[in-house]
Amino acid sequence: MTRLQLENSEIIVGVDFTKNNRVNEILIKEESCSFLLYPGKDNFNLSKRKSSEITSFMGNNPYIFLLDGTWPCARKMLKLSKNLQKLKRVSFDNKIKSKFIIKQQPESLCLSTIESVYTVLNLLKEGNIEQCETKGFLIPFEKMIEYQVEYILNPNSKNYRTTANRDIAPKNMYKKHSARGIIFEQK
Image (cartoon, rainbow, N blue to C red):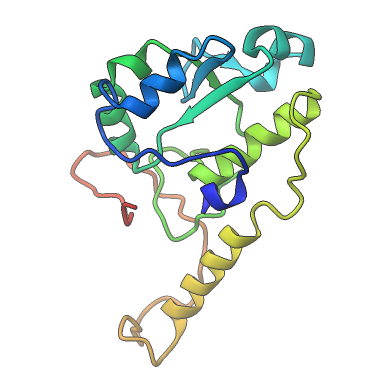
């Protein structure tokens, strides 16, 4: 879904990208700088920087890598991918709750990939670094959630339970124990 919303983006499938030809081709381009969007304390925080600082840090032709998957899968991808470990990291201060109400997050302010991209695009737009329009960017994501909620509440659905709570509320029970799973359909 994120790929469909972003021009000039691509999906590279894998877990260990250390020897991935396409990833390494992007990383060695002379005219560009590559970054990894990943949370962390020592990252370049886009929320706390002026546009001149962002431009100076990221350059004119940046590539931003996103690890798309469950949080445990993203950690595994980073752990295995020696080339991605070497990238400068960017992050942001999240001030919104995820609209992905049917999926449990490990932390209260964790976002889905598409919500993270939306946030980064808006931060880069505020700093006059990105010129894209983000007004309807999350509509497909919101429609997907709406469809899933309707399906869950549909009495003709095979997953319908008459005893189920009819109130759909954002997940606020975050992962505290490794034994508790996260609901996610890996792409």
